[in-house]
Image (cartoon, rainbow, N blue to C red; front, top):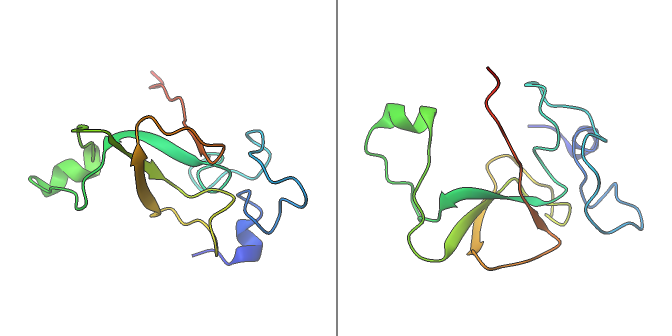
Length: 115
């Protein structure tokens, strides 16, 4: 995993925000190895997944394709950590919140398939 100093090249985290303690604009840091920007830090990403304490694995190969868990109830999944995550956000960071939660530490990513 990246050390904190190298992580600052890819993500907004608590050590590189200076006095600006809020979300930053996109594409201001380097992309990751897949060419994706802002996959860590800045804000937690609200995912379409419902929250389950443990992911129910029915077909292990399906998890590689789409680990989607339908939402049952009001809990949703947040991933990736935010600038406020200490000691630093990591890709496997996962937590939940109520679907009605609003916070300056939560955002979402709009995606589309490229033909």
